[in-house]
Length: 193
Length: 193
Image 1 (cartoon, rainbow over the protein chains, first blue to last red):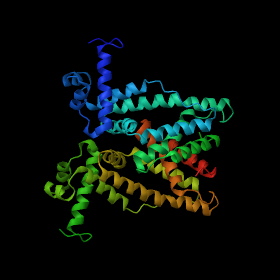
Image 2: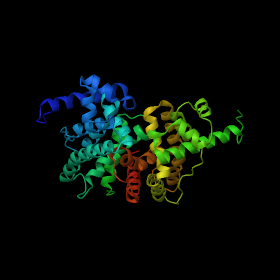
Image 3: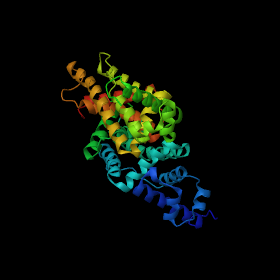
Image 4: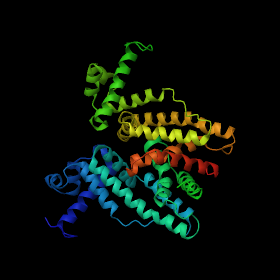
């Protein structure tokens, strides 16, 4: 099996990880199986077993691939607009059955497997790093105090949305996003982090 | 089977739900089975199947029982102290393998089953309701603006802790708790919610 980019190995990986995404979307993590993924990808199941071994490694690799996709943080020209746009992206992801399957599958897989938990950590670490640009620009424009914890601003902006989805089981909407963004900004401006 | 409180039915329920808690603590949700719960509780497995039917219903009923336990919100005499105490309770729950099994099992079960998701919603709804007393006392003492959203103050205080545990996979400690509490308070005082 070749490993050059765009080669057969890369095409098999893309087909299999696309199938993971589709299976998560249509059936959800609890019914994700190596067999179903292989069938959908048109790849022999022994190939999938040999390369990935289990559904948790499949989910982890799907996340590794997602982590490596270039994701530019919102850039609206003002920190409040950027944070609202960031929070709205998260809310919209949970409104769309296709995109919500990814964070939900991630959380479920991470509760089962260390490999998936590690992929989840790396995925969110990359997102925090990219979104930290929002705080850097805010400090430059004098909208935020110098020395603000850029990653904490990102966590605080997203946390109330994930809390509703995964913990309290309450609905999320655009108002949830705006409130979360404004709360994080108020805390940052008050010098809490 | 009798249903009077303290009767045989209630004793069986307590033994079975205690066994759910112990199994979650020792083996975790992915390896929770009706057989293991029945064995540990000293109850015939057909009894457990007949009354609960599945592990997800067992987890849901364990949560229903937890929801009905009287939980008084922290009352330190000041809203900041109350919120830090609340956030610290959450952090400490995740530091203790016994208590962390409950929210982790809940989240895992809710991803699998509507019945467990409903129990989780009801559990956190009861906690939000009880903790809303913190905001009511804060308003009375003039520490918070009248009309503050008491439940949102609770959500915002707890959300960054759960975000680290379930989403970003980052560690939580007392500093996480204090920062979350102070951020929520700053946002409330700024009139965000």
